[in-house]
Length: 470
Image 1: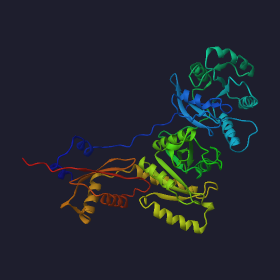
Image 2 (image 1 turned 180 degrees about the vertical axis):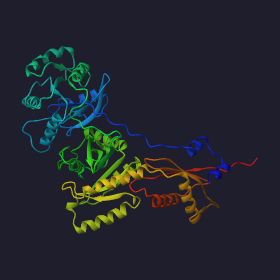
Image 3 (image 1 turned 60 degrees about the vertical axis):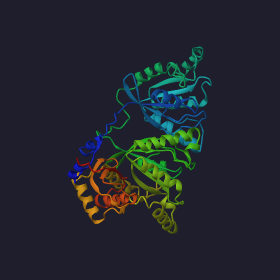
Image 4 (image 1 turned 120 degrees about the vertical axis):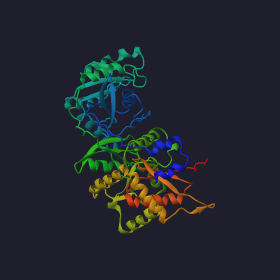
């Protein structure tokens, strides 16, 4: 079929597409960098300091306490030395509910760090909560550096001298908001950090595949991550919107390592949100864009909503592999199961290629089925079809089902080639416009022939005119 293009006018980039030999982008190994945990009570400026250290606004910041809830890892560098910084929620004494869970995450961060950076509010001074945090750090026997935050001018630096009495060494006056003193603070942090982490797990050479967990608030994303990790990795609470920052966790399933990313729930109207929820939504979209596979969770005990469909469409628009997870199956009775089947058949009629897994993240029921579905979706997402095989398939398809005649003309497919994977993208060179219905027909046949379960498939058309005879 390639020879049939010789009679048609081709543009400059057509030849590049036709001769393209694409390869999947290699996945770089993540280094085992030392870990620095930033801890302190609520609203002392930990997330602001994290953004200053990383060099960009990665952590959600708002002028109210309790915005950060999970322990969140970010890669950073200072004077050529890479390291990992951990943002944590505020630690408080004698709290219950979600605040207790947040405090637990801070304690875990201390245990799983190579060194600790304690942040105190220079204006407020040392509180009972600060004293208890210092006790935790001392019991952990981790090296520590003390930051006195919110020191916005040289005149205030003398006021932090009393912090020497804490027995943590020299207090470093800083302003996380304006950057004052951050260089000296990081120099000290590099001095106490080891060259190679003694607490972080070694990562494989090719790097784990990245999987994002997305869905509406309170559908069980954090519960699923904790179930797969086998520990309370993230805060779980009945309060919708508990998670705000994307949380990465390397988890081994069936002998294979995966990087799972828990995300904030995608709400109905992102543009109407304010503060922490708005920035959390932006970070969720970024997590989807950075992932290879997305697990879309829905609450099987509730009616399928327009918002659920919008979340799935957002994943497709990002070109990511996808698996639909119907969570909370332990709350579903026989009548609801039949109703859910009808809802999915009706609402997802344009997405029959998405595999569905029914699970209970709370009890762990059927979570062992996730690995096979994830591997299948990524296999489809990575798939490449040889050009000769692709054109042979399309030749038989067009011969048996030619394009309808429109305006006295019948469009023909001259040649086809796959120009990309992740997701698979095909370009069809034609003699005229192809109806959208005919494109969907071609996609269905390609899926039937080559099995793209779990992956979107993109088909674009390039109409080319026959060369003028001289």
